[in-house]
Amino acid sequence: MSSTNKVFLSFALRDADLRDTLIEQINNENTPYLLEYLATKASWDPSWKEECQSKISECDGVIALITNQIIRADGQRWEIECAYKEKLPVLLLQGRSEKLAKKLPSIIDDKEFLDWTLPNIMTFINKLQK
Figure 1: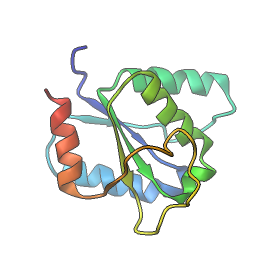
Figure 2: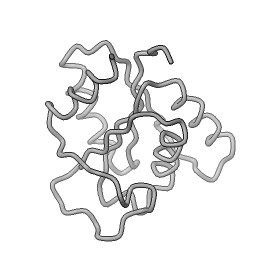
Figure 3: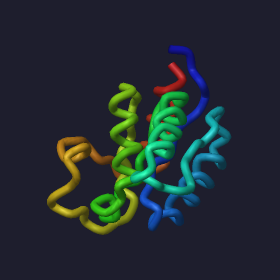
Figure 4: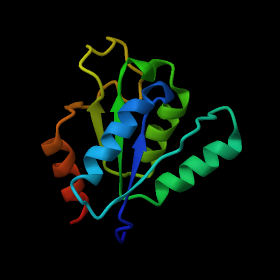
């Protein structure tokens, strides 16, 4: 698959402040990647789900900001599920310093979470370029 130079950002709506911080952080690094995301989450709407799946399938990878909000974030869970269905690389970043809930949604329950650091983010992005 050829590179699209797009990375999808997955986040819970209540974590929009983290999304904005991450966008600023990545843009400051002058990466060749355009950051895509869905500002609204309407996981009950089939047309939103189709749009979400289409947008994610056009990306080279997904960065998911994981906080305790994911337990209630149906839209974010759908985004992550779409990424795994598309077999895209997914970076799961712990979005806040708080300890995550012991019982996480099954889509990420057995996955590795990385600390939110610039080296972790840039390593992921640089791997997408290969």
